[in-house]
Amino acid sequence: MTYEEFARTRLAAFARYAVVLTGDTHSAQDLVQETMVRAQLQWKKVEAAESPERYVKRMMVNIYVDWRRGSWWKRILLHADPGAGLRVPGDVAEGAADRDLVWTALAGLPRQQRAALVLRYYEDLPDIEIADTLGCSVGTVRGYISRALATLRARMVPGLITGGTR
Image (cartoon, rainbow, N blue to C red; front, top):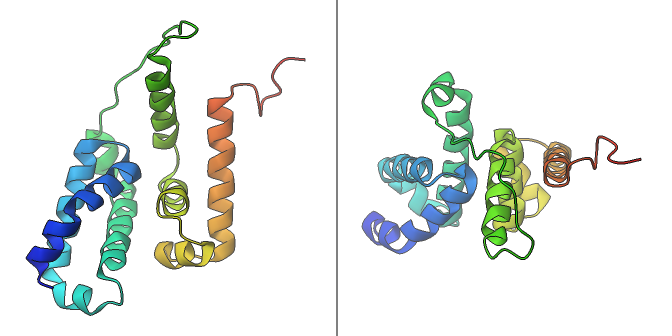
């Protein structure tokens, strides 16, 4: 398979994967572009891999984690303030608001925790493969996932961790 054939058949899937990782379509497009440029430059290595798609996804995760380390990311990444809107019971827009709440909560996670969640729940990878992809131990992966889920629970159900009502 040539690089062009690979890119043509997998680009849409990589774009969806990048959106889940970054939580932002514009950042996802940048991530896919940078990943595909690197994949083309290293095509012989990618093509020789047991699973070229998995190899490129690992490249994408590594680039994403490295991106978030740089201070420039924080300087140019803009976030809209959703404000504190009121929900009407039974409102059809409630599902969209819930999705926005989940995306906002995911965006607030540290990069390793978010990557671990994406690899577990989007890619359905076992702990050992997640550890291999992130370059850490299985115990660290479990810690990332546990802390990420606890953070999401706390953000999604206010008062759950802080004690709530008495």
